[in-house]
Image (cartoon, rainbow, N blue to C red; front, side, top):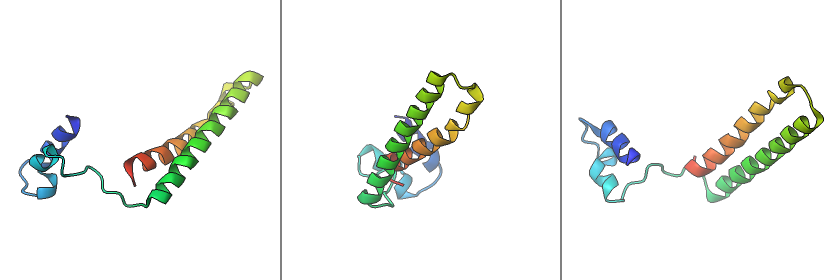
Length: 93
């Protein structure tokens, strides 16, 4: 429903057949066209999952050893990278 509303907002006042709400309602259109191969998508998924597991392991070690909370702050970059790999896999970009 949200995707349909977004398409309706984007296509208001335009005659672009790619963005028409009717095309999306019929299930013909796709929100995202893959621009990477399945092999590259798999690489991004594996990289994101491995990085996420590694980051959770480091976080657990920091918590277990009682390290200062500021040492956890750089883990944000690692979580961000893992999320980036996952979302690139999911969105096929």
